[in-house]
Amino acid sequence: MSTEAYSRKWDRMSFEEQADYRDRKLSYFVRTQLYAYSPFYKKLFDDNDVKPEDIGTVADLRKLPFTYKADIAPTSDDPDRFNQFVLKPDEDLIKAHMPGAQFARLRAAKVFRGGDYTRKYLWRHYSPVHIQFTTGRTGLPTPIMYARGDIDRMVEAGRRILELSGFGTEFRFDEGFIMNAMPFAPHLGFWMVAEMLEHAGVLSLNSGGGRALGTARIVAGMENLKATGLIGMPGYVYHLLRTAAEEGRDLSNIRLVLIAGERIPPGMKAKISEFLTSMGSRRHFVIGALGFTEARKAYAECAPEGDTGYHLFPDMDYIELIDPATEEPVGEGEDGEIVYSCLGGEGTCVIRFRTGDYVRGGIVNEPCPSCGRMVPRLGSDISREVKVKGFSLTKLKGTLVDQAAFFTVLNENPRVVEWQVEIKKARDDPYDVDEVDIYVAPAAAADEEALKAEIEASIESALEVKPNSVQFLSNEVLVERLRSESGMKELRVVDRR
Image 1: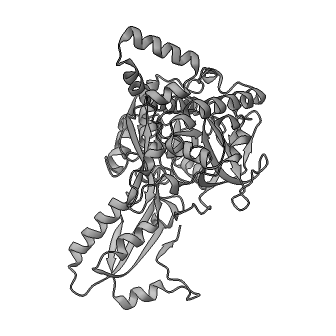
Image 2 (image 1 turned 90 degrees about the vertical axis):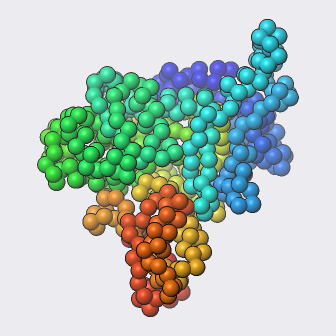
Image 3 (image 1 turned 120 degrees about the horizontal axis):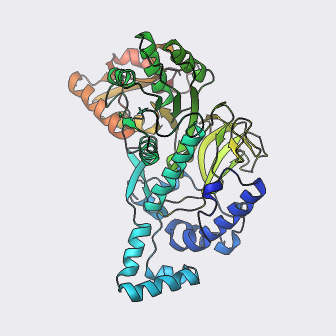
């Protein structure tokens, strides 16, 4: 079975064709790849008395328990846990599980090309070549591995996002200049944007965001280089364009703003559009995108309307929504939590993965009223309202973090007597960037300057987020700040966003 047989018409299959292809691809992947080569899923199947042949349709996935972040995330006792999700074939396993015709071709190639051919084949197809990270347990981020084929899928998904955003219809691939303001980090947001622009042949500047190139230089670069597009985190893009508008910059060439990595609040797109209009841009699209590292790709809305939901890739993944309370599937168009299953891959592969992301508006299967594509569309009102097993997750400055890291870092510092973390929006603007302030009551003999530097470094190391400030208060004042109205629970992390 050709694993990419429908890639060129991913958005033109009927929904019946999609369902048939999706089921066949899932069955093939589970039988010949996932069960065969994934240590975690082989054990999961066996422990639940499920044979790979029992998974013939996506509905059959319910025979298996969910996969959680806690299953993948490393711990101090098991730092290599993430490796159990990476496909690991060897010569004995491929002999046992590879389809007969494919194995015969491999064996013939080994005869004609030498005894080392099988090892080279496995290295070329399955060896990880790229690592990204998602949030892990406190201080231990989770590596997500990409083999060569996974990079190709990420790039293909990126090419589709560019088409959804208007490339090829509203403007040409070879005209324009895109400012990539995604923060430079080993995360999906930066690398997918950088790879998709390069492979599509679109001129771009990978600025690394405010912490790398800096807001002032990015604004100046967009103006001086006549940028036609901007890609970045919603809060930072808003901050960037608000700054540019206040400075009276000329961004009249901007045609596209693509934002991803955080929830996009109602009204943010309209405000971004207002900023662009004030700077001379007469026709532009503000498009949202959704991605999560375990999927190793992202999905986007479409031009020209934009607000018709995230267009999914039915030949690459299966996304269903469940009621987080009952854990049962919800109907079409009903709210629910995203559960993700890949239909192919070679590096880190997950099925029935609970993301913790809650979608209002559900999934609809009908032609898109904006672009006409025949793909499932996921509602774009998405928030992290679901408790994820073993984690207390939130987005800070575009980074998914486990709030438990604050407790570990600050509670374990002997020079910190009491502490509180306050999260808010800059300038009290609901669409602006996040700010993180840490209030500390220090031990009597603590060197405050040294302690401040130590806290900043340890928080940034554990959460990949640098505090905006570390402020010292007396123990009495801080204890008063920690009191809740009920008096039942200390207010350690206060989120005012």
